[in-house]
Length: 357
Image: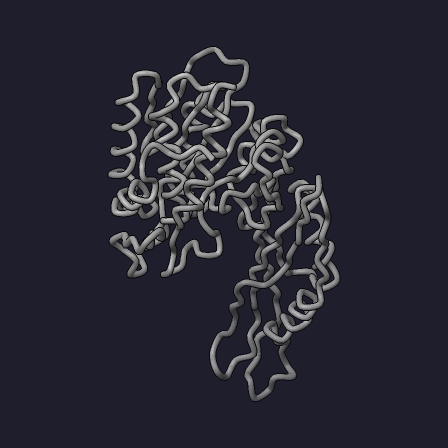
C-alpha cells in the first residue's frame, strides 16, 4: 500500500478545526483555495464558496474528485481530538477526511496519469436546491466535465455504487368540520389518515439487484399534522411521505408508483403534491477505471442506499461512485470519528489511480 507523504490524521484534524457549517463555509473555502493556488500545476477557479482546481495535461481521460466543505451543526464535538489512531470531531468522517485526501493528492500529483479536477463545494448537507454543485453548474458548467467522478462520501474505503433516488410528497386529506359533541355530523380528516398510514405500514419494498448491487427501497411517513381545537372535528390532515427508489426507475416512474399506491385512498378535494425530488444513479461498476480499482485493490462493492451527489454527476453524463474514508453510520452523530487506517487505505486507492503506470 502506498503510504501518504503526510500524516492524514493530523491533516484531517486541522480541517475539522475550521468550522464550516452549511452556509458558513467561507473560511474553509479560503484555506482550500490558498492551498490549490500554491500548486503551479493547477488552474484554480472560485465560484462563491466553491473551489475548483484542474490539471490541463491533455490526457485522454479526466477524473473529477469531489467533496463537500460543509458539516451539520455543532453537537459538542469540537475541537478535534486525536486518541491514538482515531480522530474524533465534527465532520471527521463526513467528510473532512475525504477533503484531506483530496488536498494531498492535489499537492502531490503534478503530472497524474489522468487529468484531474478537484471540486470542493458548499452546502451539501441542506436542501438539494441549495447545493454548491448547482451553483457551479449554473455559472461554470465546464468545470464539472469529466469521464468519471469519485465523491469522497464516507464508505470506509469501499466502493458504494450508484445511489437511490428520493421523492418527498405531501398528502392532504379533507373532511368536514363539526363540534366534537356532535362528531357524527362531520368527517374526521385525521381518522382518514389511519387508512393511508396502514397502507404505508404494510408496504413491501422492492429489492432489485443492479450490476451485482442490491438496493432496498422504502416508502414511509415522516411527518403528520392536523387538528383545529380540542372540541372540533378536524377537516384537514396532512402527512409527508418519502420514497427511496432504486436506479432502475427514473423520477417519473417512481412518482407514478407512489401515486398508484395512494390512489385508492385519495378522494375528490384531497391533494398530493411533490415537495422535493432527486434522481437515482446507476452503478458505474462497468466503467474501466472503476473496474480497475476494484480489481487491483480487491475493494468491497455495495449499493448506496442513501442519496449522494453521484446522482447529479450521472444526470450530467459523468459516471460516478462514492469512495471515501470513514464510517457513514457515524456521520452527523456526536461520536463522529475517522481512523488512520481508513484514511490511508482510501488514499492508497486514489493515489494508485492518479499515479502514472
